[in-house]
Image (cartoon, rainbow, N blue to C red; front, side):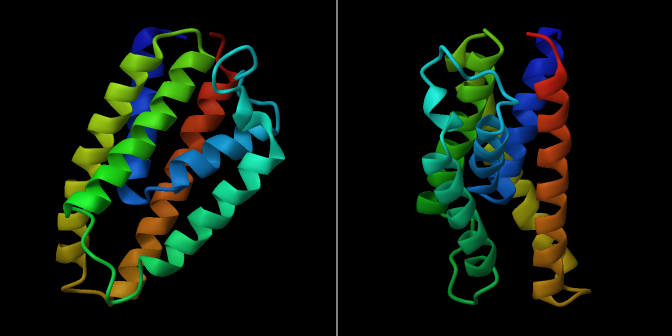
Length: 161
């Protein structure tokens, strides 16, 4: 796997975190728990545990519901944006370390992509909601985030470090 492929995958997972903050770490936890992401012998070894993977999935599922509620603040407001940057950075660091690359560079790429995707998805969602019901747009965004994340992780897990 080239650095460009790896860092492109990290950026894509960061973008997933920008759309759904907990989806990227939840998908990463699921892949790691199945032993498909070589996190062993790294500081991210804890991701291999069902005690981590299942709660991450539960929090991600809760986020999918909360995102559709009218009182949910925009993803571009500081607390939400910061959370997306943190989960994108965490996911990027874990992927980078699992491929024997710099966790810091992975974190920076993941966090940056999460912030950029937060703004892009926010504006796309506002525009799409002018033509479609907000719930439909939110469900479409869920599907894009889930599909993109699983495709990227499947490519990353099968590639040699």
